[in-house]
Length: 522
Image 1: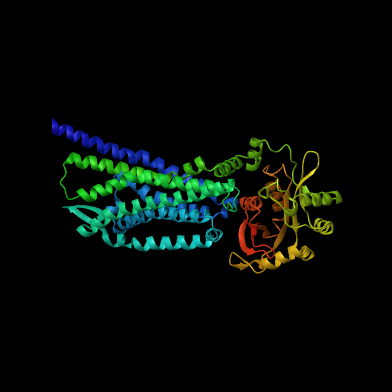
Image 2: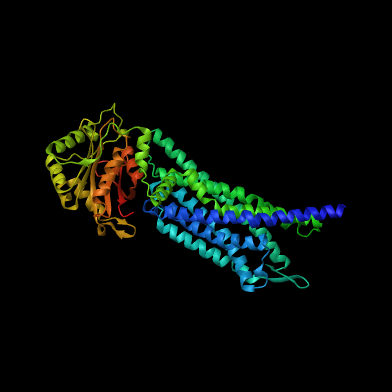
């Protein structure tokens, strides 16, 4: 009776394992492929392409998709339907194990590289932040991929079709004691190391971000270089790291236990229980590769909006722009009208008056300079000239009073202002993306100013949106410069999409100036 009971328990455990891989694993397979496809469609949209972290996520999606369609898909047949074609074909045997090892280890490698990138971009040092680039991403991803492709070649050599009993053959590792030890210890060591590295890198990045926010609140001369989207991507990356630890900790313990006890004899019941637990942990392990879309949808507001916009567009439904939704929620649009062109002499005089009120030399002690200021004073003649030559963007309140402007200075007008002319000279000695900046078609953002009482109400973003609408198809870059002491302006420019091109010391003061550029092509 006891023997029958034991056999029944073993039978039920085997049935549960088979059913899990036959019915549950295919659900993960469908969710993983569909989720990765939708995520890829979002990340390949124009608004996401230039982000370096998104590049790492795209490579990660490709790698996890390869795992889903090789190892995960194969386990449905080998364990769920007990169809083991690779036990009789040496090529399938070697490829099955090689792809399992390669694509199991490649995605977390990409996440670690993404963590390093977020650590760089969150640094308080400007020079360190500039290391976060597509060039470094291409190099590191290529190097990491080549390393694992070559390192795992031992699988192609050491995996064979083994005869474990007379006339019973399975595809398995070489049965030598040394190689068995290598496999059993290598897997948990690599997985645990990756867990620790990801958690440490993400934690240090969050520490940097926290320091940046504290410094901003205390109005110190440190600048935030991460946009809201960057912060959301950092949270997504951290979630990937946490789920990696959760979903892999069980299989790592199982590998360690097998390595320690594999020389010990086991009863049939013990073997059945261990097989059941191991297969369940493998199922959990596999499911980690299928949950990316849940992380992005759950954490990133920008991702949710893009996905919603894409799906609604497919159904022919219009979606409000994200900023309009935010403006509606924050109820800040009532006091400021849309951005428009400066056309009349009255507009030019109003620009001049607003400029004079916000000159650094005229900002009173009672009004902190950290609220923003303008440095250069342009005369009415120059302002009229640039407004006649090209559209210049202004914003007015509900009473038609001018409350903001963003002045475009085209290359042909730069020589009419000593300050702009000097900036152009500096720009022409810099490089952007490995090419001299002067080889790009660019114009100068001569000055941006928003009246006191209207700052923080999205007027800055609206005026730049209008600039992009007007100049985006004609110019590659818009370039300006900001002093390190103008904290608010520098932070706002980096937030909307500008990046540091060059840093230099001013003539008359010892303060640092940053030449910053926004690539209209992205």
